[in-house]
Image (cartoon, rainbow, N blue to C red; front, top):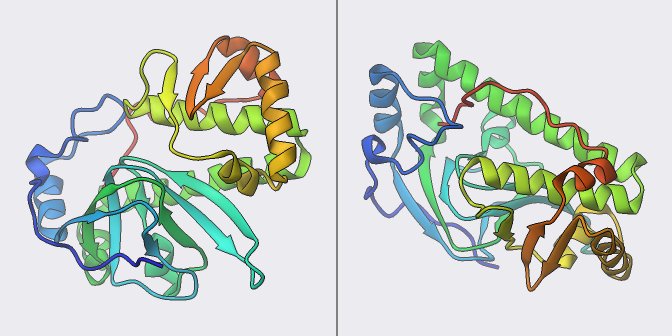
Length: 252
């Protein structure tokens, strides 16, 4: 099991961050940019399958994803896995371990990734000296809670067809916001097994449900290439309500 190691150095200065300038993400003030630049200790390249954070351990680092996908999960003693959420560029990882001292979930890279690395020990400086950035961290934590609420609704009350449509639409919209889609298509990095582990369904049930969803002609998914054919129909099947959020959301 590969484990993420310490950062390898700084090659992407915060002033030239590829995430800056994306319409969905807010700008830093010059003072905030200077603080974040000093807060950052470097970048870390990780391979797909690497564990960035491990359930039951603490971590000396927090991460912002520059590129790539990861997923958060909890695993039972017998190996059964529940995927809690997916992470993509601009998402912040490791905050839970910084607050509680021990991670209650693991985070694994779905693809090769590039991460900005921040020392956990410097987090208090953000709270004590930059209230706007501190609010941003609180906003990011609240957003994670909101996503988990929606996932619980999926597993607990939606039908198999509804929960599958909701998950795929939710992930497409999040990827669309950060520029990972092309028109109505995206190359999703996860498999049907990942979907099954997210929705609490067997792999067979997941496969049959995806075929039923494709039969509605609202979407198609082949060789991980996902395409929305009729967004309104997919929204209706999912019972999906896109939350209203800040015009430009924060990132660290």
